[in-house]
Length: 315
Ligand code: ADP
Ligand code: MG
Image (cartoon, rainbow, N blue to C red):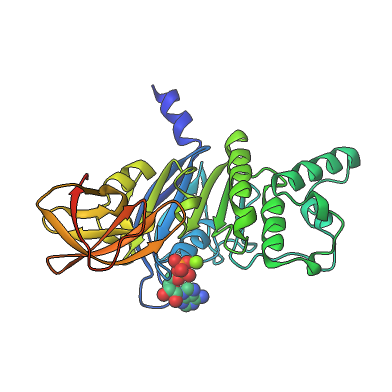
């Protein structure tokens, strides 16, 4: 049993009750969680809730006010105790990715790879270029790239040496929608296959819902909720969590109801008056008034303003 437990403790990130402030005011209070080897965890929260700060603390960029962080048996130390920030087993891609602008994409990606076996190095760089879909730009100088292309170079650079754990701060924020979907699949699939632990700070549900094993929600300097994406989606405790996943209304006495959980029916006691229809591709989002309460539901076609509709709630 002891050996079994040791095995588990030996491969994980442990964040033990940490608190931190840039000044007297705390940005994060009593943050406590663990992440297993190969697990994908998302940190979500509004802008300014401390997502980036938390990733920087995990990387050892600042000294904690309270608590401890461990990766396996290594204690993550801040700059007061560790002259060179960062560890070999951990890579961090910040919101302001830093690259070498005057060298090529391939050189940037291969910078930390050994030159001892040039053929292997080249193969590896080619594999990485494919993961981030940049093969066509291998020999282009980084300074000539768009923001989104630079972000992809930064991602490839971070996974080049196969870290044990990777910290990604809004990793697709600069990448346009045309590329985003396939890049997400490609990167997260790669990390899962290599059993690389991954922590993603994001405010985009699409970075989380199909890829994360677990998520934590930051609000008011604390972890407000945690669970699998399914748990949090199906049972949003607060409007903040629901708003992360989609359109919703708070309706007495039902509570939080997503727009897709309200259907127009032929007859019911729940009657609302249509205020506005918004086309959104798959369906229309209908805004309606239910006894003075604002309500949102989905419908397959546009509805006229002023129309009285009967509704049913399936939550
Ligand atoms: P998020 O990434 O969720 O948007 P941040 O971690 O960037 O949030 O910021 C959390 C809080 O800490 C904000 O109030 C922000 O203004 C503050 N903050 C961030 N970086 C610094 C810094 N270098 N010095 C002082 N305050 C900071
Ligand atoms: Mg941030």
